[in-house]
Amino acid sequence: MKRIHMLLIHTLEMMVVEGILLHLRNGEGRKIVYIAPMKALAQEVVEKFSSKLKPLNVIVRELTGDIQLTRLEAESSDIIITTPEKWDVVTRKGRDGLLSRTCGLLIIDEVHLN
Image (cartoon, rainbow, N blue to C red):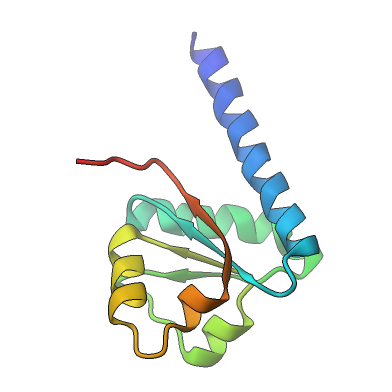
């Protein structure tokens, strides 16, 4: 059973990466925002995506309560990994709405609705 579970997770990860690559090819410069459920997972996703997408010169950055981005860093990023809390702050209380306006693909990981 554990082997099937690991295979399913690997398959889902590959589907996400394929979606990202498709968007990067056809997204006309729009950003990808990946919402991870926790800061620890956000850091893990940044490391994983950065290493896998580095040969394609894709810039992956973290935006969480601990890590802030300058406007230039946000603009130059292809993929921004964030948390639900930070995305809420950025989209509802952000000054100019840059990230929400430039987001072309939103990936939500492990959604838990109350």
